[in-house]
Image (tube, rainbow, N blue to C red; front, side, top):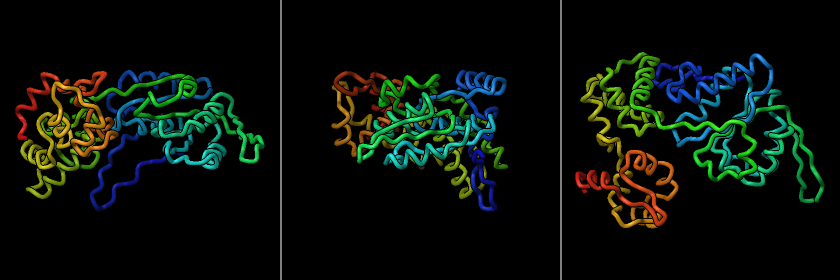
Length: 318
């Protein structure tokens, strides 16, 4: 059966995930497409079809995939793409799929090409073949299934693999109002109180990312418990500032990136050497929001600081 959230224990543990699609905040057009597809499955008895969810880390792709399975009362297997290291791993996974159920692959771009080649065979006909080390042809048959794959890097997926997805859904950054609702819902679900202004302050300083908003909320909660117990605007600002998050929602690493940039383009390798932050972290964690708010720009030769970024940089305490 689909996995469910663990109950809240006596020790404080935040219940963070929504339990149904109705509780999933944001991505309204994506939810509309999914709800139409779910209605069609329920009325026709057909499979949902293969679906690709694209968005930066922390946007709720895996949560959304699990909620789809829950809405259809379907069993599923969940695995990370990089966790499939051998063909034996893939075979074990594929033969264990529930009938008419789901395979969820998180960070599917971490799956090696030889495995995506086998997987797209299974996506077409629920069977795939390959030659083993003894040059014998091995045939693996699976149950009928729908694949829901999540990725932060659609461009790393091969064209043949991408073509097997009937729908590709893109999760855009959340609005501050969406994140405010998520924070307030989280507080309510955990029998806590936070006023709307404080929840909005957390929202605007969370880069449009739900996971980051919930992390910030937990930090505000911890700080407030140590300083009088109330989550108000002052404790919110104090807690976020303590964690290095400024009024724009930028953290220390994002400010480091801005510090080394100017109007002369800088490549990722140089950015890594000058900040000590890995290229992957810059790409996946720190750059997306700086691009979104127009502080930096990508060019063919590298990243540059925009006029808005330069104006902000001039206010930084370097």
